Length: 263
Image 1 (cartoon, rainbow, N blue to C red):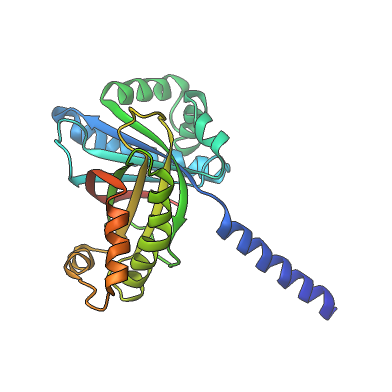
Image 2 (cartoon, rainbow, N blue to C red):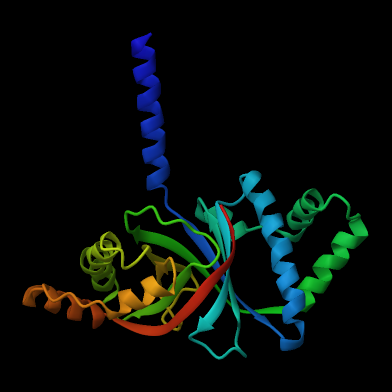
């Protein structure tokens, strides 16, 4: 009997480790809404949270976030960022088609008939535009227990590796910058950090090749993190940081607040 219990415990630990090591794939959708439709879109995103929760329950996605942009771009470009999480690249590329979305809407809103569901989607598509979509693969992340909930802040930093320095830049993020962010998390100055590589679009004309996500529980933690300076950093460590910074171009930094989350 004891042997069976040990085997079960061992199996659960192995499964938990496997889950933790699973590669995460994400689709970033930058959403533009006309000013006279903002309030209608707020209602729509709450509906979408219920729809994506059905998709999560069905095992089609690993999660979904809806972020309101605070700074980093002209609001005429876009005001929101949606992130959908997947467990493999095929699911990421296939995404959720319109038929599946309608199916989940019917489950989430059983009082709506087919015609009402179709009308709802036609109206939602008409009120938004998506000027940019990024397909990303997570390459590295910090070890933390950060809780995603409405109100948390994120800095989305779009990077482009300098020509000929793609591998050097990735190595710098994983070997130089990841430990720095891990230390900040342990000091309570940050919540979570992850490093992503762009899967699509590809090519030298792509605006960005990578993205880092920096998470904070609130504005207090965010500003404390910005003000922190590691005075114990050695000259060798500073040189490594500068070398890493010189291997990429920081294209854009977007600060956003999490409004809706599905996990």
